[in-house]
Image (cartoon, rainbow, N blue to C red; front, side):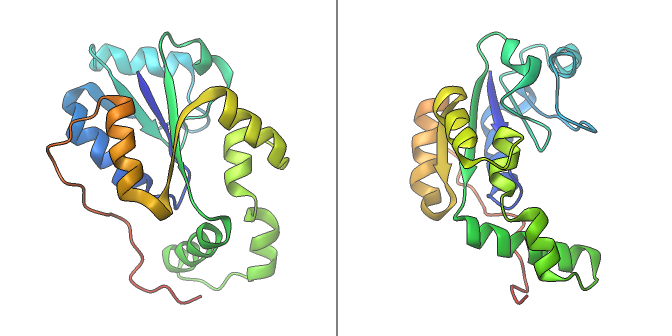
Length: 172
């Protein structure tokens, strides 16, 4: 089973669309209040008996998800500065309010690291990437990464992908 670790502002919605197009009713976007668990996957399997892929902001390469038989984690990373600026701009547009950038940056500059490792230590995030994640794509080389993901993950290659959730206004 493929498990997409959706890190905010790293082409996650586009990747989820590709998974949906490739696996159809055998794909589930898990929506959990916190980190997804083995029980969440088992619950999803009641409705998706041939589940082949899961995705969502709650998917993390830790906890009892590591006990799911044949789970294969993958993710996409983005240049940290570009990802951070995009995330900040997204917050401004979504909440339609002014947020102090310096204060926001202190809380979110290491977002990719924290999602991967539940830590601010980049070494721990690198260890997670090396030990638990079978495929890492790069947003900056998205088309090539998708091509490699298709081969690694057994995704259909017939349908073209369309980028989603791209900001209309990129000013900050």
